[in-house]
Length: 200
Image (cartoon, rainbow, N blue to C red; front, side):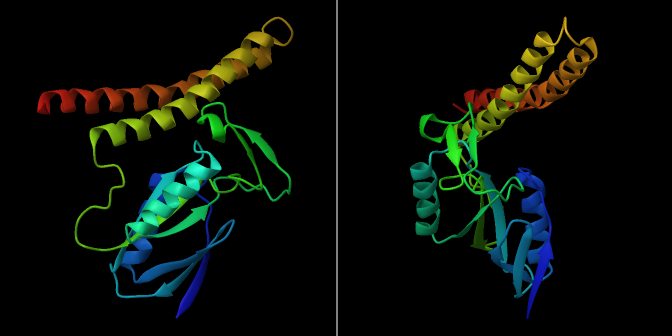
């Protein structure tokens, strides 16, 4: 039996992974993804586990290499979009990405910002980032995304300061809001570094 469910999670990897794992615990295994759709086939409840990885910072080659590496480890892997753009020829600048991934188009990594990774359930938690270095790198990636938004909002607030004070206040407020995840990710990085130092 198969079923199709329409959902959109954006770049929220944790919420998406929890939902996919809940579907798996109810006996649904992923077989296909679309812009807003997830297609499942029935399986034994809890047979598989899912993790979702943000890869929008990678170049096309590094994203493909990483996907191939995960598949080589025996995992099933799907690309997933983090936005709902349906245009052809779209170009996006990602200043927080690695050198080859800063400019993305619909022919490279645009609409392939996430990887959904499936493995057979062996009773252990499914973590793609197991070392302190991996976890710190993952958190820095997300911190840098939010830091880019924070910087852009504050710059816009400064630009509008003398022309449109209301717009300046709005952008300043957005800058402060987007600073919250930056601080939270940095705090997680600090804790992991501290624990890693204590273990050495």
